Image 1 (cartoon, each protein chain N blue to C red):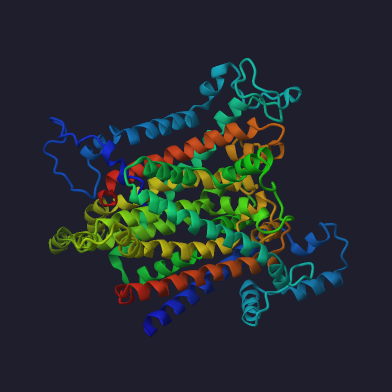
Image 2 (image 1 turned 90 degrees about the horizontal axis):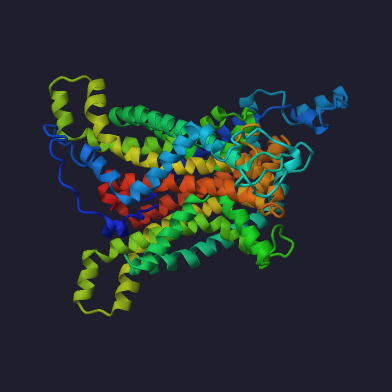
Length: 314
Length: 309
């Protein structure tokens, strides 16, 4: 995949100078590692600020769904009444009711939590695993590197959807942890490869040689010298992956192998709605809308992060 | 070159062994007893029949032995039988043409639509066309495939009535265009994007400046110099993608009710039909690896530096 960013260059505001006082006395690490200046540059950019705000909003919704779902006065997603099954929008119920007669707005708001939780768990776990393995494989090389490389190749041999379906069926569990674990199992290999490549490039630099000449231990060189200068590409990849994880989770759930009722999630809602999409399209529209906006926001944030951490891709 | 190809083949073989064993391991771990599932768990099967069935499907052997017996069969072209006695190869032979038609239609759409879109955007860099193409591709990446699927069903199948909503009764191409478009949309977006970036990069290369300085006509510069050179990454991507497309699409085949390989796997998992799942997954992984191998070799031919890594 390539960059959507090149053309946006004209929109970019000129680089602001270093803010007075801020960061003075701290040496800049150069272009490979995020600095304060880069972060400032990032958040002031509209291409980041708009989807970034949306992501923040979604995080708030996921953390505190109660008050937001109750905004129209009917915040309990499980206060269902079959008499109101499939009724259209009305007073206090802006999205109408689902087939079970639950308030659709409250259901959709509560649906954000599992998606965001899974996205965070999967991204954080696989990034940490990838950093550790990539660091070790790239630093020591040799037999460790070879074994890890072949293992990653095996994981690459599978189409993701197929493998995830088989594993989730085999696990027989449909909780958030089972889904997260399965997805993480297919996220770390790519990240590890990127981390390893980045470590390989950093390992040969002069300051690493200098540290070794001064008698620093392997662990110290890896953690203090290589890691801070080599993790940016993985961070970029991770931020680009989040959106894909949310979409993947929804797809698995939609197929019936991911999360299941009574868990409230967009995938579950869409799975139910597909049987009624002719008579009751709003059941399909609202969860998909939230899902798409969420994925899109994360994808755009990832793009902006890549833009700033990986100047070569501009 | 021979050494490079040999190395790649050996590598692919070792990965194939690892991958098939993993598939075997996971499917072996599927919950439930397949023999009991044959009678719906009613315990109506006599003990001798049950024992005979277990013997026939090697269910009494340990996992490694089962795997070795399976691989032995595979080398002789025998993919085994499913638990109702149908040869897996017959199931594959039956559903493969459907998947192939779907995959190749999607592949054709990726080339016919994706490459021109990318060229168009790349030649009009920074203009509205470029923004529209880029925005459209981001949208294609961001909207989950099943949402695109049923939106297309509602819009083109029900509201507009241009294409059948589901099934393959009307044959190729009518029944296949809509699912192929949905299946190919991701690859189409990637192709367009790669083509655009690659073209933009090539257009700023020195040899293009030389060609312009020589006074060559713009058309010739674009077609003979820029396009040819910027097609390399696109072709590589397309080759890898073809392996994936031919591997069936569980979601698309499910939504559009198309009885291809992905559909069969999903049914196989639901019915605990291990041999079908193992057979088809093994085949898919092998196709996928073969496609990667071909790409690796092509890469080695195109770029000699890679051979000596």
